[in-house]
View 1 (spheres, one colour):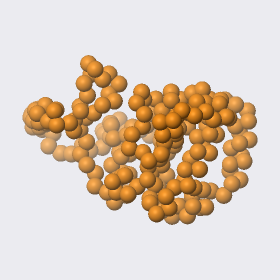
View 2 (view 1 turned 45 degrees about the vertical axis):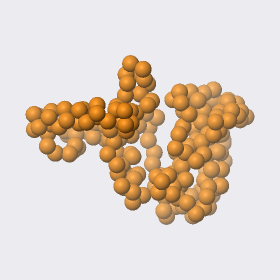
View 3 (view 1 turned 90 degrees about the horizontal axis):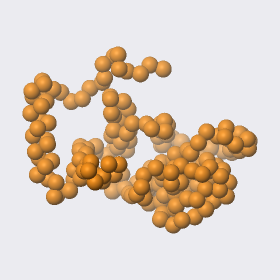
View 4 (view 1 turned 60 degrees about the horizontal axis):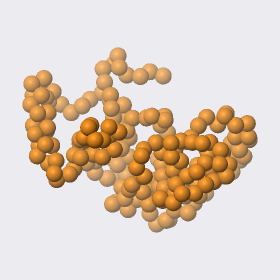
Length: 205
């Protein structure tokens, strides 16, 4: 989406060992804590905010939206850090925020913005037939959806951080794996694109 002109920003907790990549601006809370006066990292610089972590994330999100490059569309990711009931004053802060004019209305974003809410460990690429976040966002933005392959070295990269699928030195292995996959699909009669899960596996709320 950056290549299509989108400004990308990220604010919130971060559980990976490596820093975020592919963002114009990012402020992370490594490991998700502590919740009061948290040390954070902003674009590679160590900083420390005073206050409750969730309030800081919300304030930095508003600041980022209000100070974005107005000529560019924006993709902003914000992740909360904890249950707001952990500290008594948080409920009051939430009431104060609800009295502010919505930032989407202030910034004239309401008519041309998609807001997506997911759980803490929401699926990203449609695993188990669930919501395809990445392809859906690309389609909504009018951008092509590239095929995604994943290949990890499980001996040296147990956290599956470095995707080797697109690297030239693994092109031969990827060709072999694709051929094996095609053979297995033919063997099992799997000739159609992935569809919805069986009715018994679908979630009902």
